[in-house]
Length: 283
Ligand code: BTN
Image (cartoon, rainbow, N blue to C red; front, side, top):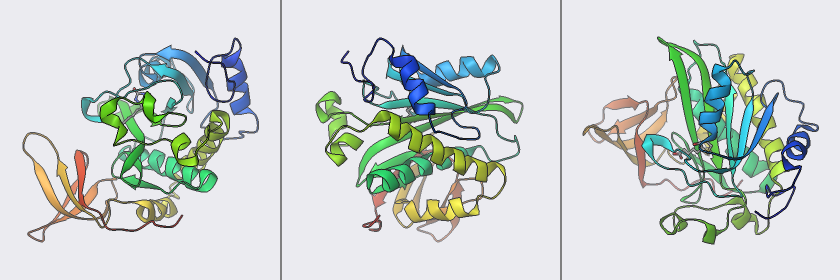
């Protein structure tokens, strides 16, 4: 692998250099308290799960240069070549907070980071995608381990196409995906990107756990490309809802006004935008 301390390439001492560089000036309360950096793993969510079961502290971040079996939502594969930000964060929120909202919170932190620091017009597609135009730049996979109804910990997996070239993407992904590098037309410093993202996520997570998150959900609604669009949500086993997306429910579900005029809330599923309301032209 190529060598580059800032671009997530290989370097004899990259692991510790990278961890120290990200942590320098990070000053977060929870997210990034501990950072584990791996050259290669199957999935950072798998690694994070192992650490969480061993009692890893809340906010532990597991990062990998390459994932050999990266996972997306709904059993999909997540292609994870070098140059991406493939990471998982261990969180241990109050069990009575709504876990589903953590996926939305992570997407919001990514979108805000891209908009604020890179002037990228990122928007949110419910529930777990960050898009630029109609191309995906980031996906979130949140997995929880429960004891009965009570979550013991939550793993927030973030896959952000940072320094990914179009040619490095599999052919079928080229028309659907984009990257920070492509949009800003130069390599991004992964260290800086991580610092910005971890800080934003930490601040938003603090608001969430302290129940002061109303502002976040209005930010979310403003950046949502789903709200106001005509959507089809497939819940599997033939359960499909179509209609206008009206908003986000208190549980983080999508509120849809169906063609018949009734309101339904879906908590998950595969969401397709049928007709997107044009907004977010400006940052
Ligand atoms: C999706 O869009 O379907 C979610 C993609 C999530 C990918 C990230 S990369 C880091 C973490 N490890 C994984 O195996 N998946 C998530």
